[in-house]
Length: 338
Image 1 (tube, rainbow, N blue to C red):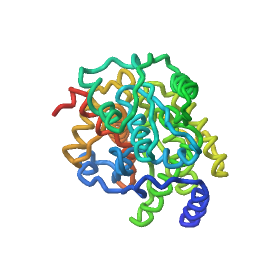
Image 2 (spheres, rainbow, N blue to C red):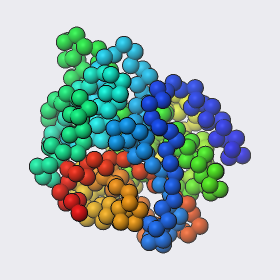
Image 3 (cartoon, rainbow, N blue to C red):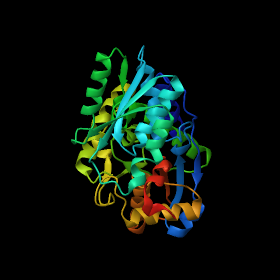
Image 4 (cartoon, one colour):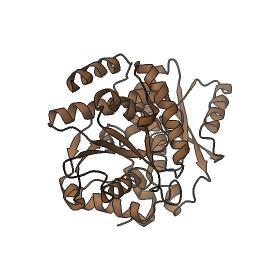
């Protein structure tokens, strides 16, 4: 029975150490006006923007598990582009724990959309939270500069703990499986069964965790990742790699056939919102007063809207959209100044 699956998986997750920094469970709310406007399934939103401090976001949930490993580290080291939501959440966690924070800031992965990109939004919050920023060129290797920065800090006598790009690894994915568990518990309390969980997929561990958790708790629910990197093959490969590692942490079976990465909604490139992304952000704001970001959740919603238009789900279905957070990035994109 579903309730037995939920209890069994909750017990497994409960054995993973967690710092309990985040405010969980996050809300699961109906999007009644958006559902009526689109004329498709019932849409619910999982509010991962409400995980707690530092403007929240899905990475804080992963960090809650990952940072149990820091030992005697005195510094968190991570990285991302200038407007990285992940870097902002690492900086916030470091401030909360009283640790130093050094961030590799990649330049060259995308063309800045305007001068505010370099000074506002997430990067301003990184400085507010006390992070030290190190400008580095984008080479395509997400973690090399982060590792090199950690080595430099070690040589200087610091004790760094490396948080991978996107907080994406096996343990991060295992921790993120808790989101699917919460969705199963909350859906059961609201007397519905999700047909699908839809979200933006980039560095991979979020989708990996959702896939492992859904397979355990919601076996008839499909996890659909909307590629936001314009690299669907790379995204799917990373999701599978992290899901295999997460399954080992949780002693769960993993079938790669369950990994569904949808291409065609990323726009011209990572970090560049196209018109349908902007339209989706405007629609969510005006119908539901929820702020999505132009790099991740906005593209995720654009993909969901397109799939509904293609009749992937009908009126009797219930689809959960995962709001991964990222609203501070809105202020760095002048095209979204309403």
